[in-house]
Length: 129
Image 1 (cartoon, rainbow, N blue to C red):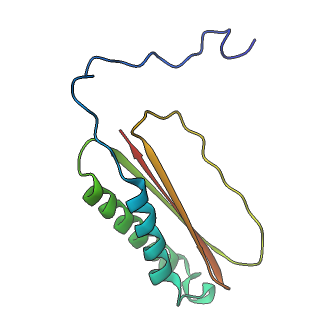
Image 2: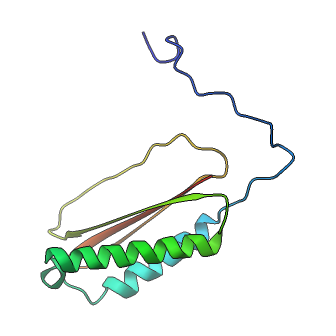
């Protein structure tokens, strides 16, 4: 039995507040900011200097906080924000990631990646109305 025939369906969209437009979040502004932030913060860093657990924790926390602050500047109301930062050693490995979500029209995901010879960083920002 598949999900549709078992009655597991998304609830119908509520039209009760159709008169009040929902806010829009500009994902392009966020993506541009994330690209600049990762590049300027990590371009001179090497894995050997950030691999210490406390240093890595501090860098990822700072990056996450700065992305979240920028998201609030872009759209201060009407969204919940989630930021994920990952930093790994660059050993020439390949990789692939994807995200699957049930979205409303105004929800946004922005993703940016930075790599140098020593490390790889991924930043994902979610703005959910």
